[in-house]
Length: 152
Image 1: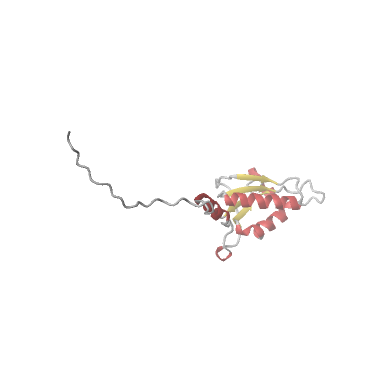
Image 2: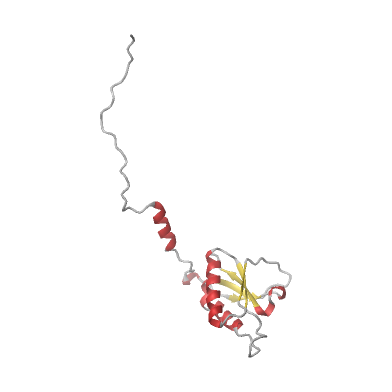
């Protein structure tokens, strides 16, 4: 019989990885916690005021989302507008249209939602909105706003 040349086995103990304790948060949990703590608000120091612009008649642009506020009360409209703009901003949507109506069917014959919405755009919505304009006639004209959102 022939003998094989075999080296002796090293008997020094090998290090084994420690099991992760159950109380230590997982990478996924840490990631989700960090994502939840992120703010969608632009820092006030870097924020430029929201400006009203006039759209060029021949300029083509893409509208990504539309919110129609017809038939809503002022409070309902502001609540819907707030959620709509914040969601669009958080999802990186560049521009939206908000339809307020012209107020032709209001008891006073005057627009009731348009001034309230415009005030919200320039004040509370300013942290999300870069600029806004009256919509082109085909998209609602004086009864709608095109809103350009800040990039997040």
